[in-house]
Amino acid sequence: MPAKLKIGKLVVIGVGLIGGSFALALKKARAVKQVTGVGRTRRNLAVARRLGIIDEALADAARAVEEADFVLLGTPVGQMAEVMASIAPHLPAHAVITDGGSTKQDVIACARRFLGSHFARFVPAHPIAGTERSGAAAAQADLYRDRTVILTPQPETTARAGRTVRAAWQQCGARVIELDAKEHDEMFAAVSHLPHVVAFALVNALAQRPGARKLFGFSGAGLRDTVRIAGSSPEMWRDICLANRAALLDALEGYEAEIERVRAAIESGDGAALGKMFEQARAVRSEWLLGKQR
Amino acid sequence: MPAKLKIGKLVVIGVGLIGGSFALALKKARAVKQVTGVGRTRRNLAVARRLGIIDEALADAARAVEEADFVLLGTPVGQMAEVMASIAPHLPAHAVITDGGSTKQDVIACARRFLGSHFARFVPAHPIAGTERSGAAAAQADLYRDRTVILTPQPETTARAGRTVRAAWQQCGARVIELDAKEHDEMFAAVSHLPHVVAFALVNALAQRPGARKLFGFSGAGLRDTVRIAGSSPEMWRDICLANRAALLDALEGYEAEIERVRAAIESGDGAALGKMFEQARAVRSEWLLGKQR
Image (cartoon, rainbow over all chains, first blue to last red):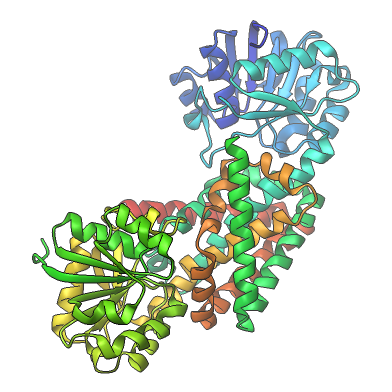
């Protein structure tokens, strides 16, 4: 059991799926007294209040953090720099900060640059628990239950901040592990960012065909699942792709080579090669699913 | 309500997900008296008998069809020619034949060549109801419930055969429509065959990365859904890719161009272009899902 955590004032900047679910989970665990939500759109904050995700809604992040004990940065990674720069002068000297960004090296670079002395209390985090839905309405108290949250603490990170942030994610029901930020980014370029690019591109390729509307009408569960994540937030994924550009381009290169191999086998009618590729993919997927069940 | 159908002897050649589910559905609807299953592996046929999918198991398709009233060809499309050639001399003059192949022009060409006079009683069909599982154990009586089955009858097809095959699929719970075979193949190259190629290639691309095993351990629901169909039968999909080669290569070309567009935008750091592509994909997907609900 994780140590019981008690947060006085939690400030969630960006009350979407990630930030909203974090607040709901901590409220459910009675690990927080008061939650202030900060966001760009009034409508989303109103939804968050109505759903009991936040107790107070503010448009100004700087003012919101003035008495914060714990801050979660739940915005798309492309907004982290701006948010950090605006809150840094107003953060109390004891407040711990974490984030929910899908890329870590860029967020850490921003934090190092903009959080100043608060950087030692910033514990970068990536909860592996997205869905294709976004906004406060998509938040769920159990989003993180039995999911993995990856922390990428830095040499400067204080032990207290590390313990507090770990305990908070554990209170959300998550399994918390630590990884090197670079390794994290390379791994997620492959298992997460690449599949999103693939799904977005597949939908666009189909949409450009003549009679696209009729086309989709004939699709089945296969296509539906394959492109589910093309429903994800375009802004969030644009930011991730740019933030993790080098690793993603590397993953894309490997993927394009595979597509090219399949294409060549189809073109030359090489059934043996094609069968072998499909067989291998099925075997790898089965083994991977088995590993997941353990 | 579809006209009540009564089949005396149904012969299912290839008792997998498609053939097995067809037999189970007709049994449940009490629309068939006796089901004979034909397959290459004893083990799968034994499973089919144990699960009550078939009443009799035979290895020899020619012998099996001798007193058939209705024949379903449930093998991968690459085996259709051989199966048709072997059953044609033994088919009764009244038996109607349908299939469950995912491509239609090639199956029709085989049938025209190998079924002889029986071709007029062959009604090509494609049930849009796959899952990634295969074999008799994956069969379900309600696989076709509320799903679409596409028939691509030919000028030679008799009205009686058309009515009987339509009624049989309707008894399985399916909505039956008719399409031109060429249009069918082009459409499914895009909405089904291409996504399968994409899923197989994505798994293989990830599997080739260093530390692939660890990689998969960190993947979430996004990747899992995106590559679900990479669990599909390699043999079946090899055959489909070869049978529908021209249309699939055309669809692949459009997809590769989309991947290239995304890659270029990431490489040049063009956030506006990237955001627009993702936005468009999300909008198209939403509209498509809305259309599906109607």
